[in-house]
Image (cartoon, rainbow, N blue to C red; front, side, top):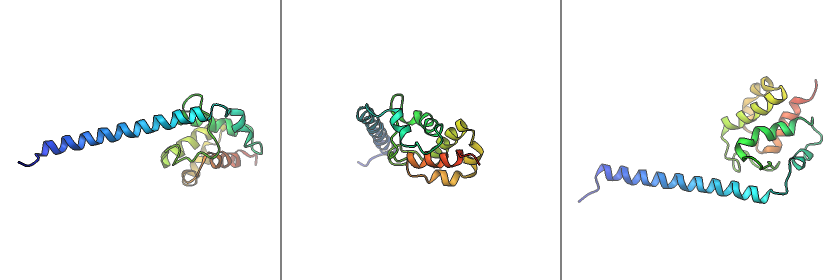
Length: 136
């Protein structure tokens, strides 16, 4: 006796649900690990990595990244946008636009949307916005 179509659908659905639970568990584990490992890393430490830039830029990027890190977790400059934070191109653009809006730069960031989407890490995002925040 062969497997019916409904049994195949049920098996595939079960595999999908298990895969989603696994992915969510890995994400929660990664965030918990980041919270524990970064307990001593502060907002002042993050901002101190970018003293050559306008002092408003690093806090604006930190605030724009809060939804991706969670409350109480401060980003590190070397955190990759795609691999560590799992952001896609549109989400990278959204973070840049949010931080740019906080700095009054949203139109300059919108114009460079393709460039923004290819930024590798948090430090590159801060420096990108820092260049646009410089007075002309």
